[in-house]
Image 1 (cartoon, rainbow, N blue to C red):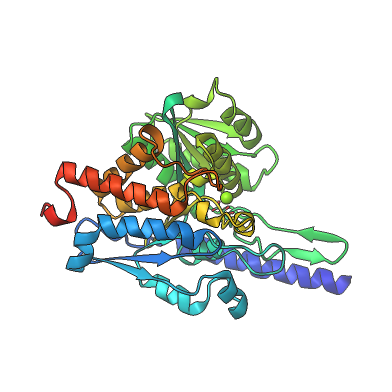
Image 2: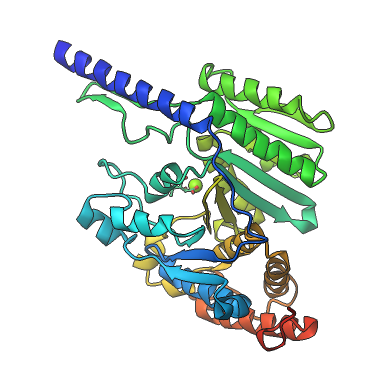
Length: 395
Ligand code: IPM
Ligand code: MG
């Protein structure tokens, strides 16, 4: 037992030193790419597992259509990144195999299908690895329910909290397990800034800071304090403190939920609350997610690879709406707002107003492919209307 305690204490020291180094590294700012004037933009395409390849196929068809001119001229490249399947990751014993990570680093942005995370064991989730390795610290998740006047944007811290060391806890076999939660000064400041900057740029006057600082006194206490320090630089925006439990209740309370605008939360609460929010919007299959860092950005669906759906033989009926929303966010990020608007409008027509082809996620609905065809058709009609289709592109 004494030996076990000593080895656990040594492991803790290693973790503490690593995390202090990470906090120091964050203080040096990476430079951001200006996509507006970029000569070349490289988009990495990662299929993922389970329903990933099925929904990604439709997203890629849409991108190929919207970016036809740019791909032809060589300004945009769509690069397939192989090797992020669960089979290959297990075979290599790496959550993101080295070669795959090297290929990813040659891209500017990524559109990624869901990847399966093995439960238990030591294999880290590919998402968590990518968020850490590419330093994608802001997880931005919009949720809208127009008929209820709900327009929420979640700013979830994406590299810290319970996730930073989630695969590196301590165990005294049969007796005790301990995981660690990490909050850093620099890590909190940068996500707080992202949330308040967003609020300011978009004319929002309220940011809800969501923690459990009454219980997680050190980590959430620090998160809340720094969030308020940041808020002081945005006097036109009201910063409100909420605990995650009551906020979870508020989101299912139609009498109050539409008053919230921007949410700022640590990693795990953000994970959970955004699934709840997505369900209110119509299901996790409808919500997109942006993982933003200073150098890289990765766009994905907020849901997982849906192994149960695959097992039930219903993979082909998966809803691609989430990954299409992610594709729209990606187009905005690379400074192509007209293309993003076009996709948003086509999605609005296909899923809200016209709804000629409806995906339910099951056999009773249209297939993912059928919805893709419908969306492409709708895009063509819209492009013809604006004169923005490939053959008639504006310079
Ligand atoms: C998400 C997912 C991931 C997370 C999983 C796949 C590791 O649930 O992006 O919300 O927990 O962050
Ligand atoms: Mg999640």
